[in-house]
Amino acid sequence: MAALLNRGWRLLGTALGFTLFGVGGLLLSLFWFPLLALCLRGERRRTLAQLTIRHSFRLFLGVLRGWGVLDYRVSGMPAHLRGALVVANHPSLLDYVMLAAEMPVCDCIVKQSLWRNPFIGGVVRAADYLPNVAGEDLLALCQARIRAGGLLLVFPEGTRTTPGEPIKLQRGAAQLAVRSQVPLQLVRIHCSTRFLTKQDKWFKIPENKPIFTIEFLQQVAADEVVATGHSSALAARQLTRFLTQALQPGPQ
Image (cartoon, rainbow, N blue to C red; front, side):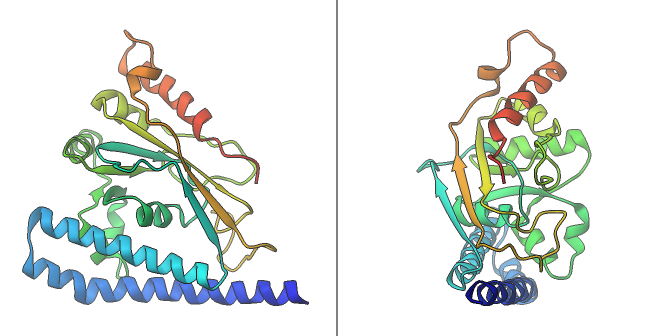
């Protein structure tokens, strides 16, 4: 009986948590971020917007933790993490939220349709996240952000992992690393049970509280992994194989 009540409470907490998330995003889009746009310009506005997002995500996760919906642990994050391409596997809907809550200010690549989303469109525009535009244009934008000392977070699977199956990475992140020669910060995420996967609805609550483990691995450079003298296409394939092995999580 106690286990059933606990599961029911976590279902209620999940529903209330996502309601809070949606309402919070809408309020930020309607009031706070337009105010920032009126008062600040350029880098200062973008930085303050991303700090707002970071602390909002921390509040959201703190509420979910406090209600017993989930827990998460972070290990190995460098004290002065900057100027890197952050590459992570993607088992859950909350991966970006957890990473953005813990890392310093970071950018990400978003679908262009999200710029018009009524709940988070204002957030995306204020944070000046990178739109998923044509290849060469996107490459230049990514290079500029990282070389300016920023962090760019990408999930090279392109979608959430299918539980029980090996991860499959697209080559975009590897191509960016090879062509730009920027540092790679690998992050491996593991969840103790299935929760908020692509295949599961939000109301499919696991029997036990999910516990996320977020492990920052050692930074690497593309030229440390890829043999010299190869074409960029071959080098990207080799780097993708390396990333696939490094980011493969434990069994769920």
